[in-house]
Length: 231
Image (cartoon, rainbow, N blue to C red; front, side, top):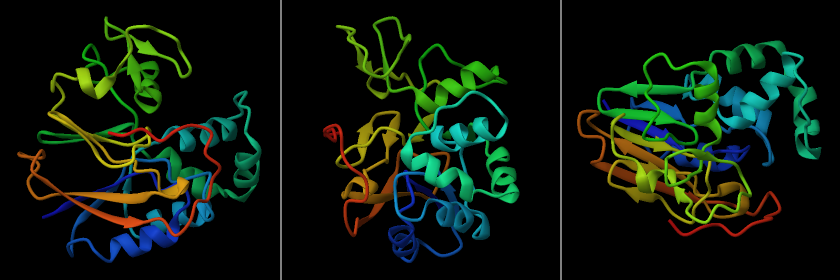
């Protein structure tokens, strides 16, 4: 059994279809989330995941649409205002079924990140939602919000001690796979014109022994308001 984990798709359905042709047959396929928004076919990509039984982790973009559906006070950007009206009841049912993380032996898959203080043993909702957004932490492993100016910030995976096994995640776009001892970041910014990545793992008891499969983006679909980081 192969486990194939896809980075953030963000509506790049054509690239996803192309990438799926390259993976081992009869694989268990998993998405790290953020299938929706930004790209050309966000709703179609979400339905593609459901149709092809691709196990999907909750991303912050799916969660935002879901909270809007629940009637929470959510401000959708211009692109999300285009996407949200296209979502049907069955789409929201699929989003509601998405877990915040998946653990398979020594492998953990989540969307954003984790701190060394978080334990994934029935965590409360506020902790699970943190998994969707976390990028950087301070010297005490506390979550730092986007656009902070903390002088001692670190990317969470550079500090992660491996207590929840080897983590594969997306959320933060890199020019290529970000490789740490206990983690791999596989959002390689396809929607911004870079690459779509799949991580192939043969043995979840040794998930750090992985293969990388990638396809190039056909074009840049979304405007870039920041510099894509080197891993």
